[in-house]
Image (cartoon, rainbow, N blue to C red; front, side, top):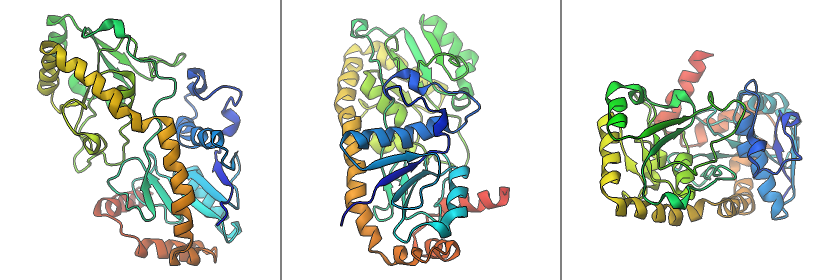
Length: 350
């Protein structure tokens, strides 16, 4: 079966400086008013560029394509565009939806979904493809050896647990002459530093806890970036991390400030373990490099898409009746309890 053109729908494409190399940190700077543009860039434009490198027939468009293999983000703008134009799609149009951080349940007009970890992937019509690692990562300066001086957090302030502002944490840092560096969105409005790990000695990333929510929608991106950057990590108890964890050399897990402090002390007292974590990270990170993730996309497009096109569910979609397609998806796909619950919550909020 000849593969259709793969077309990425990027509503804010006009805001992208396409003259810049996607590995250039300048490419990832953005105006804060464009809330989804980084996710569009990471999941759509970057994928478009990587597939283009291996001579895939790919396009990217600011308007919704009506034929071919259409790849969209599961944000509200893109979902609405598909819903509003569903009847106009060609009979052979095929919709791939990347959930990313947008929704936590199936978009019923999707033919295939991509999720950020393997918890809800069924390898039938929902597949796990890892998030691309941050482009242009600057590895930790090897001359730092096993020195531990800078404890670094990279991310939005809202994703950092309040315990890192506690008196106990501040006293621990002072007693051990450690720096806590907040490399946050707020700090770096004009510059981009999230790719630079040159002065980082340990990365910490523990999100606030939420009842009845296991963070099963998130990727293991922070862990993968640490592996590739050569920096040991102390991370919270999240599915995406535990899914990848084989030994303590992958990362140290912590949920309380005492556990974070104990993990840091463990590394301070055991330079050999610190060194082994760096080496192990480089080895583990090999399968998450762009070349390997490109192969996963290639397999999805050349192997899984043709399989789904032969399914009864896809044959129903050829009528281009969005209500029939939604009904078929709702009752023919094995949704988990968590996904049902999140769908109901979404409908209540509307």
